[in-house]
Image (cartoon, rainbow, N blue to C red):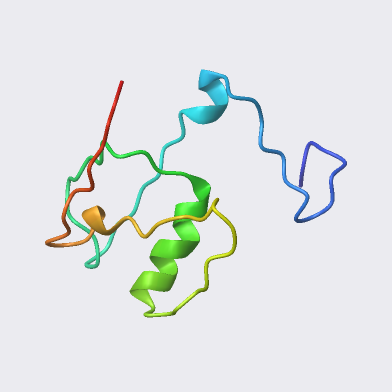
Length: 85
């Protein structure tokens, strides 16, 4: 069910307003830290990269707009350098 005439894969990415850019991501299970709030920015492209990381898959990067495995959310993961305004 969708509220748009777009076909699968065409995507509706919204605007850059707060309503469209302030997303919440959550993960649970033994592969993730408990009660961890990550101040580092995350985006939809990161989801595929963290799944690939946990499955030990090598996915070649194409272009500059690629996701990152949110390794700071994993047990003993190091926090990336974050510059928040």
